[in-house]
Length: 171
Image (cartoon, rainbow, N blue to C red; front, side, top):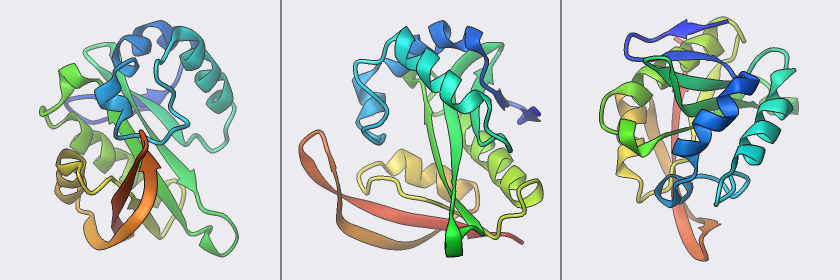
């Protein structure tokens, strides 16, 4: 399964992605806006372990973002369970060299359409840190609506952080 986005290609991870993705993932500025399960520093072994962990998932829910043939970031859906099985959380990151080009907006739109069309979900949401204006803008441009502010809901790099709640509902 591949999702052509115009400015990028969203596709399943491959073993060969481990080395090139590390160049973009091993960046503190990237890490500061992600969950702690995304390590820093980030090495080839971290990338290889992640790729192994998501390779066999059915349906596929974790993808690499490729630009001009180069792996540049990742995007994934964390499917809800039990009474929340109708939704998923979307998370994403992109190498700093590719920020500000509309790549992530295109990828979020494509994966959201996949979530609604292929996974039959009703709702997709995201929880960017309130200080991450770029991520909030990506979500807004992709059609997500800010539903609220989760005060003091996360700790990152020793700092208590607020998170915005953004969501979109299947049309």
